[in-house]
Image (cartoon, rainbow, N blue to C red; front, side):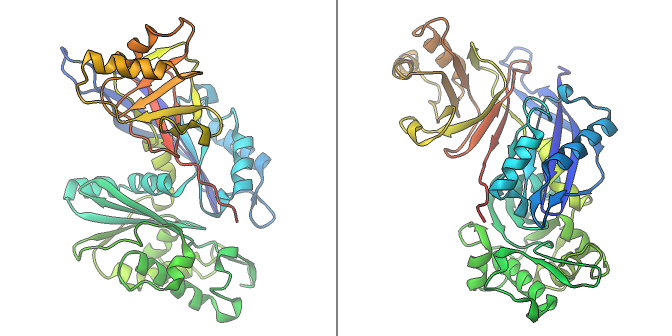
Amino acid sequence: MSESLLSVGIDVGTTSTQLVFSRLQLQNRASAFAVPELVIGEREVLYKSPVHFTPLVGSSLVDGQKLRRLVEQEYANAGIRREEVDTGAVIVTGETSRRENAAEVSQALSGFAGDFVVATAGPDLESVLAARGAGAVEFSRQTGKTVLHVDIGGGTSNLCLIREGRVEKTGCLNVGGRLVKRDEAKHITYVSPVLGGLWEPSQGIGTLVKLLTRALEMAAGLRPAETILEKLTTKEAEHFFRLEEAAVLSFSGGVAECIARDYPDNAFGDIGPALGRAIRESALCRGEYRLSQDSIRATVIGAGCYATQLSGSTVYAQNVRFPLKNLAVVEPGRETFAEGETILAMPGLPSPSYEQVAALASRLAERPGPLRICLESDMAKALGQALASRLPGDAEILCLDRVKAAPGSYMDVGAPVGAAFPVVVKTLVLGSQ
């Protein structure tokens, strides 16, 4: 089969905003006589925008109108119309993910970046997308090595532990190059609130970058944990990672560019160059380490190429108006704890009998409202048909399988492509500082 999806990734970060357009090719891995097994095969990057400074009002609030004009211009530069986009993600990262900023980004880009693209944020998603976009997951898969990938941006560092190509854990620290801003005379013009109680400008930039680097070393298990690790942690990962000696450190993000080469101290009006040097001289770079080829674009490449997955092919949909956006993933019986539209996440049953499917359908058919169900086991079509036989003809029914989504996350579901549905599973964890 030759079907494909046009995907966009938009990364609105503390320092920079970027876009990537990609073509995702669908492949059928099943034999000609088997049920289709659709997967996303080749991923071709069609266009990478220049790296733009994120437009701000004041020191840290996103300028929604300027952001919208920036995105419109990059669509024009790429020669792509908004209605051509099938899937993708807008990732709001670092300090920019504060609640008021994320709302501003959502409003500015609402209805703009395709029907199936919504603003998302959350350290789990960002960590995995950066690791995939930087090639760290593929490097681990090919070499069999354990990799700790660290994406160091303007406001946060997202960490992702990978073993033999499988993501095991993620974490996030308030460590980034834009936590302190300086003018051309190197006078400090901004200090992030996350540094309160940890550092004062009178202590000097050298002291600060050493402190931030120590926190990264602690997170990587290269030195004993101290109080600063807890104070800078935004997303715990079993406090934190314990790496074997053979593990490889992998870096991406704007600060990773400053690990690879020396920049003048105030090249970007922040502490990025100083932090990059401190990391290069630390225990983080004493063993084997790797730098992404396109460090600063790792997250946006991940958003454009890896945010979307496909459901199984034995699925069922009746009276569903696609796309479905921001469905809260809930467990049966806990819908009252979620706001807005929901989708039930269930493990399902391996090789279920007719009686088992019928019994489950009878229980689910008693529920009010649209029936949207996400199963891990391969039984969605049988369950959907059983539900349809028990409900009125105008009932909305959606049954997906081979999709794992944790309660508390959110899901977007696009119109079917071939026999499968494109799905984005997200966390929408927004900062409150």
